[in-house]
Image (cartoon, rainbow, N blue to C red):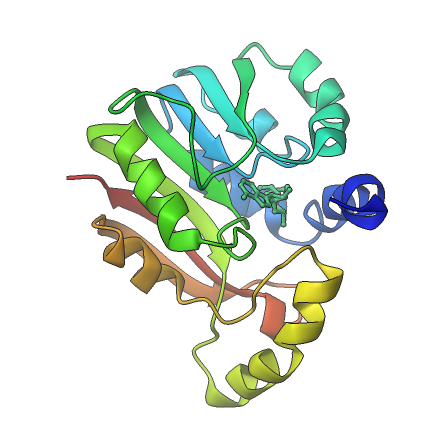
Length: 205
Ligand SMILES: C[S@@+](CC[C@H](N)C(=O)[O-])C[C@H]1O[C@@H](n2cnc3c(N)ncnc32)[C@H](O)[C@@H]1O
């Protein structure tokens, strides 16, 4: 990782990911998490205030040291035990069937081999465990999609490898999950090309 991705980008993410509708969406997506939770792309811990009381431990997976450092105040204010259990969602240092629920918020856009990461989430989740996600991806409208394809190369450069055009529901089902809840919408206050969100819950069979 270079200076920009190590020292600058985590601060930008900490601010940008706290804007607009994000708080309400974090509260919605975290509802139902319980017991041992896997969170991939923990960032600066913006979900920490929304973990339900039923959560005992969160296994946070995050490559950016600065993100973890910025989470300090949120972690200190929370009664949930959060451990930085790994650095890369593509290869989780956790045993099979070890977590009850899993969480990803605006992270599947960035992980290079997203299919591998979703397979890892499935491996680590107990059978019957649920994966909670809110992610931006390919917009439902063709006009927006054209802009997403045009601007994706630039986005990848400035936003740490972030893609605009990933098909979130398809990726989740291709990994073998069964989606039980899904809401697709444009996030208020965010340009459509970066705000075509899928919020849902998927069951690991
Ligand atoms: C847009 S940020 C979202 C952060 C956080 N989930 C949130 O909602 O505020 C994407 C996060 O994914 C992390 N990330 C990038 N590559 C990753 C990987 N291979 N495995 C896990 N996380 C990764 C980044 O460091 C960053 O914190």
